[in-house]
Length: 193
Image 1 (cartoon, rainbow, N blue to C red):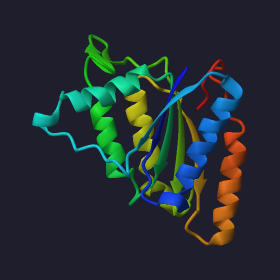
Image 2: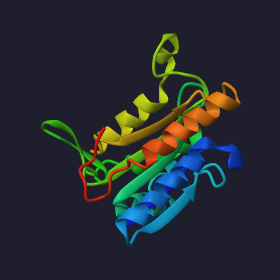
Image 3: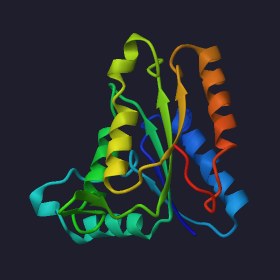
Image 4: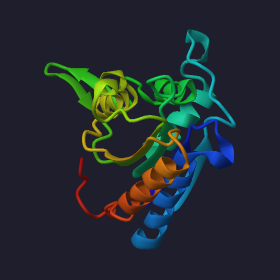
């Protein structure tokens, strides 16, 4: 089984998503058995933003091939300024490729990555799951849209929110998210939303 682990936080050792995405990968290692892991740190080694001259280059094809080869995607995604980091958006620009991960047909768009599982670890500094700030949450919705576009329509999300609201809320959010990591389904089980 091939697992692709992506981190996109610029926070280094203090990153909540890095801590939690590593815990998800470890869960897969313990419960699935033989798991080969490819790791990509999009903050430490950002991909170039897509331009026409860079589209379809050998380097871009390697990023796409890495994704296509993966059975499982584990994605660490902090919410920055109500959305995803630009480094993560650039990665999606490399893998959302017509004829490779989706195609247009008579019935509209067909995702070609439907067999893949995805676990997305998302952190938010404040609380955006409810209340007045919910309308400003564009990270989870954007990720669901992009993954769904390529056929991964039931990604599992683990969300830690309120991590910038003080030590106690941060610890509580991390503890709740780690409890959710313990519930990540094995690759042989059906994906849940």
